[in-house]
Image (cartoon, rainbow, N blue to C red; front, side, top):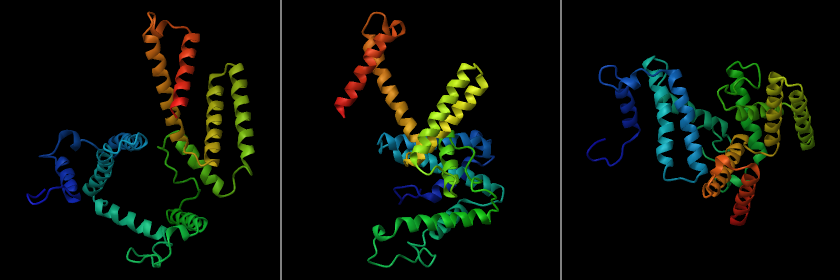
Length: 280
């Protein structure tokens, strides 16, 4: 950053990464990293961004987004060192792809073109836009010689998110229930199969049937346009709040939560639910 500048820029970030990766002057930890070792950090940073947004912790968001951007810079540096591509190629490919996928915004296929003046975004037919988007993505898959509509659903996605994406892709080509009732029936069917497997005391079969049940639930989430990963995170948060209330309430008693019986814990649990209901 120059003396005249008050803020670091993108070029400074790219320089920083190059220095960190320098075998002579860089950071030993950064120098030894590779494509695979950084992936867990990338996933963690993405979740931290989501967490900050859901908590509306916007003061934390620049830092969290910066951490996520740093992952992109990391991969770009690896590629640059291997002569594959660099960060500017990433920007170029991304921009070109987004321009091509938005012909309703850039009708001439260039960033300099714009939708005609006086036509608001609300006036663009949503269904038509979605159809064009899917057609363009299908063309991209064909260019990559994909043989299935499921080919580019990342295997590293969280299981709930990947299940939702897989079922969404299949639904696009007509593999779906004709109505919501079909999904409800499927969930009941899978739950009954879990119970049957449990009665047989077959651990492998129970795991398999619970997996089928969870996959059916992701289809229900898709039908109602619900992100199953977010829904479960919110349910986790709700459980945590209520159980912490139970712990706090029982900590005032001599026995504490460890020695409390189920009836006592249930009583405080219901109190926690009532408190949340009255506060909403």
